[in-house]
Image 1 (tube, rainbow, N blue to C red):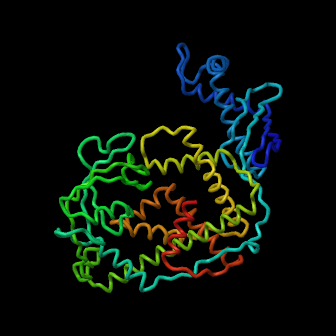
Image 2 (cartoon, rainbow, N blue to C red; image 1 turned 30 degrees about the vertical axis):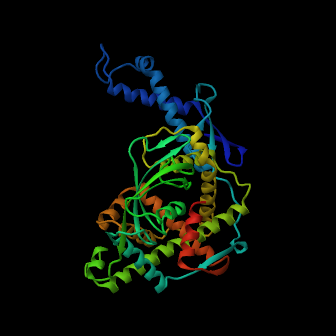
Image 3 (cartoon, helix red, strand yellow; image 1 turned 90 degrees about the horizontal axis):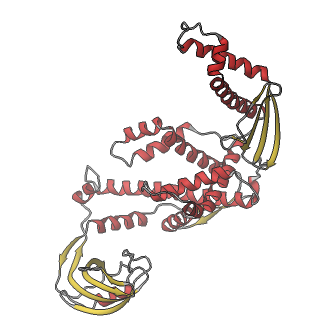
Length: 435
C-alpha cells in the first residue's frame, strides 16, 4: 500500500492510497469461496459450485464488498501511519474502482485538528475571585427560604409594600384585546414585581375597586401579547393579602428536608450548598477568562467545519429541550458563531492538557458524578447510570479535565486576586456562562 498526503488547508488533507490489484483480487477470490460454502444453486451440490460460476453469479457483489472493506481498512491504516489527528470521518471523493493493471486507488478528504505551537501560559493574566461564604450570605438565604413558606391572609385596606395584590385585567393594544375572552388574573407582590407603574396604580386601590389606565408593559412581561407594548387597561383589584413569615423552628427545618428539625443543621446545609455553588461560580469565571485569553492568542485558528456544525446542532437541541421541531439551516446559522467559539476554546484547553501531560483524574470524575447524584432521590442509581452511559460519562470527564487544566494554569499563569461578594461572584459566573 502506498500513501501520499496533500495539504489542502490547515485543517484538511487529501489522502491518496494505492492498493496493488493482486491484493484486492486475492481478497475477492477468498470472498467468493466463502459465498460458495453458503449459497445453494440448482444443479450443484452444496460447496461444490464451480469457481467460474461463482465469479459470474456473485463476482460484482464480492468485488463491491471487498472494495468497501479495503477502502475503510486502508484509510484507517494510512491515518495511523501518517499520525493524523482526525476530526471527523474521512470523506471519499468518489467510490474507488478496481483496475486490474493499476490496482485500487482511494482518494479521500480528511478534516484534521489544527496543529498548534507551544502555548506559553506564563504570558496569560487572570483575575481570581477572592470570595467566601459569610454568615450574612447564609442569613440572606434563610430569609429567601422563609419567603417560600410565607402564609397570606386577606386584609381590608390598600396594599402596602410586601403585600400581595390579586388583580384582574383586560388590555387593549393596537393588535387587539388581551385576553380575547375573560380576564387575566395576576398576583403582584408590591416592591418585588418590577412592574412599577402597575404597583403604583394598585397601591391607591382597595379590594373591589376598578380603574381604567394606560400601562407600558415590561419587555420581559410573561404574556407575549403584551410584552413591551402600550395598552389601555381595565383593572380590578380582587383582594389584598398580608404575608406572615414563619419562624425558623423544627417544623420549618423539616420542611426543607432536615429530618432532625435542627435549625443549626439547616444553616450548615445552606452553607454547604452555597459553598458548592460558589466553587462552581469561581471555576466558571476562571475557565471563561482562560478561554478568552487563549482565543485572543490564537485569533487566526481554523477549526473543522463539521465539528462546529455538530456543536451548533447540540446547542440548538439543548435549547429546544426535546421539542419535536425540524431543525432548519436558518435556525442553525444563529448558533454557528458561538459554536465555533466553544469548539476553539475546547480544542485549546485540550491542547494545553496534551502539551503538559494533564490526564483525567478518575477520583475527581467520581467526585463530580457523586455531587450531581446528591441532587436526586436515589443517588446510587444515578451514579450507576453515569458509569453505564459512555456519553454521559464522557461529558463529566471532559468537564473534569477542563477544570484540571484551569487549576494547572492558575498555578502557572499571572494571577491576581479580585475581592468580591458572594452575589457578585454568582452574577459574574452567570454572565460568563451566557457568553
